[in-house]
Image (tube, rainbow, N blue to C red; front, side, top):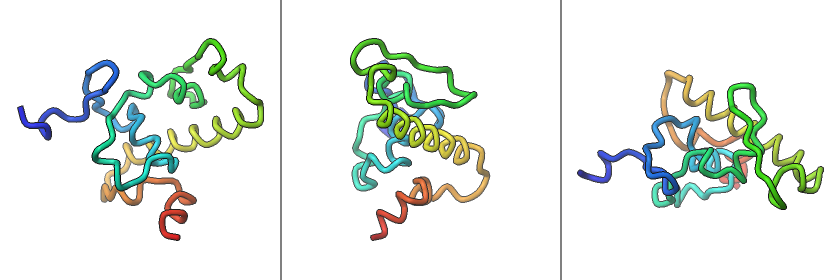
Amino acid sequence: MAKCDQGYLCEVCGQDVAAIVDSDLYLRYVIGELDPEVLHTTPERHLRCNPVLAQFIDHPDFERVVVPGEMGLANLDPDFAAERVALLTRGYERLREIAASDGDRDVTAYPLPEVIDRYRH
């Protein structure tokens, strides 16, 4: 099977990451943590297959992820945790907007506005 026929396979569980709202790769791209130049070469994961990242999403349509131990949200600096929750939740909301849009699917328009500004400057 050609690679393009396989879709995006999760490097953790091996299953297809069929929806953008489940994509760790696109969430990191949308929030500016993944350079657009490596988007097509970076391995994909389901959000739930990256719990350390997913724990910061606080959205009614996303089942909460709890990470035990030192890297768990409850054990992190409260200011850092609040900033990450705000950013990752906005990123998740952006993925939902992209998934719901019927218009042009220009990947360069996916990131949050401040991320697009940063890429332009």
